[in-house]
Image (cartoon, rainbow, N blue to C red; front, side):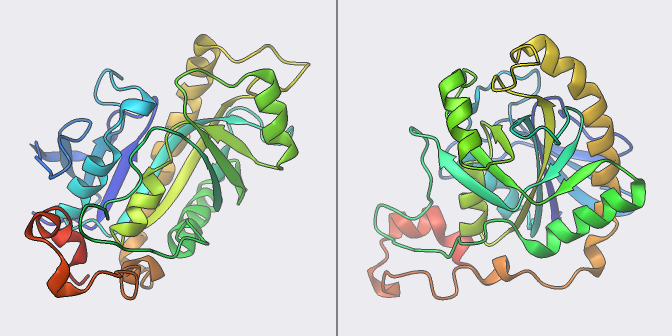
Length: 284
């Protein structure tokens, strides 16, 4: 069954409410196993693929996530629109814990994670100046407005390695960069989605003020979980609404990201490399 909408659930979002489950598929990829089985479901008549980024039971740490396998698995099912949901810390006073942020930029501070499909015999350089699909983000914004969900339109997400939270010095440094939120999971996920020619956008759920805010207690797991319950309820509403919008959206520039990005001559791509990335090279 081919689906066009993929949802990657982050902390607190391990399943989709109001979805009719059709199947669960375990997918082996050239890059190993994804975080968990992919749930194939139907939401208001639209087929959707859902993947829990941390696995059911939240057993996979941010730095241990097999991002390449996750994205490859969704791409193999036909996903064109990919909505990522992530718990984040707010780096701005006006982004109150409980708010949603529809980010449009990223800063990558991860260190140990494989960040490309294209290596070992095939080279590609995709454009990534605008890492979030404007079409999909616009649909998310429209859903938030329709549902009257408190949200912030645009902002920069700084992705740290984790799994520890930031030091106070790091938090203050990121604040000086004028970022909006800090999280641990959207990279290299966003880069890989672009290489897979999928339109990608993020619902960033603010759960705390990190540790920069002198008037608020430092971030704790207990505090994050308390705010997250309200966040997840809002995110579920927005996801359901945006799923109903994708059929009417125009095409995304991300769908042609590899059009002029592959540098390796076709006859120079090794069989092993083609086995790994051939799926991604297929026309959309």
